[in-house]
Amino acid sequence: MAEFVRIYEENPNSKEIDKVVAVLKRGGLIIYPTDTVYGLGCDINNLRALERVAQIKGVKLEKANFSFVCHDLSHLSDYVKQIDTSTFKILKRALPGPYTFILPGSSTLPNPFKKKKTVGIRIPANNIALEIVKKLGNPIISTSIRDEDEVIEYTTDPELILEKWDNLVDLVIDGGYGDNHASTVIDLSGHEPEVVREGKGGLEIF
Image 1 (cartoon, rainbow, N blue to C red):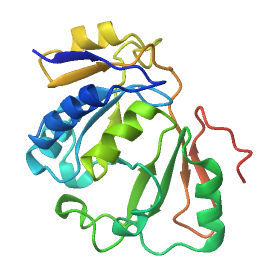
Image 2 (image 1 turned 90 degrees about the vertical axis):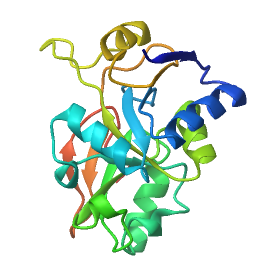
Image 3 (image 1 turned 45 degrees about the vertical axis):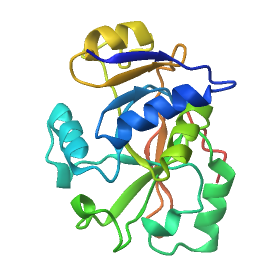
Image 4 (image 1 turned 120 degrees about the horizontal axis):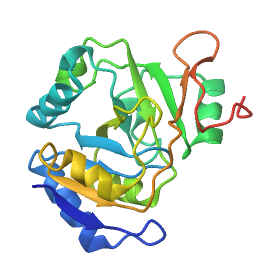
C-alpha cells in the first residue's frame, strides 16, 4: 500500500517533503506532480529503485530513456559534457519550465547509464518537485505515468493515480490535478536544436 501525502505547490510543507525524501533515500518509488503530467521517480543513485522503475516500464535499465530531474543548472557538469554558450542560453531561458532537453552525457554518469551518449535533463517549474530534489541533494530519475486509455493519455487526478499505482510504488503525492500535456522534448546534442516532441512548452525560446 502506497502512502498518500497532500502537498501544496504554493508553499510545500517541509515536514512532508522530508517524508518524501526519506522514502527516496531508502530506495522507494514516488509519484509526484510536475509542471506538466505526474511523474514516477526514484533516487538516481539507488540501483534497486532504478531497476524497479525499469521493470514497471518494461524496459532494460541501461536502455531506458529516463529524465534526470534537477533542482537547477548548478550540477549540470556532473551529468552533461561541456556545452557551448548558445546551448546554455537556451537552457537559462527555458528552465525551470515544461521542457526536457537532451544533452550529451558526460563520463561521470551514474553506473547504469555509463554507456549512454545523451541524457534528458528536466527542471520543472513546480515547487514540490524542486524542493524534493533540493532536499535529496541529487537528481531523481523520472518518467511520465501514461494511461492505458487511448483517449486519455495521462491521468490527472491524484486519487485515481493512487488507485492504479497503490501496489507498485511506495508513495503518491497529491499536489492537485495534473496537466495532461507532457513536456516539450528538444534535442540539443547535435549542431542544431531538434524538436523531438512538441508538448506543453512553446518553441519561442529559440
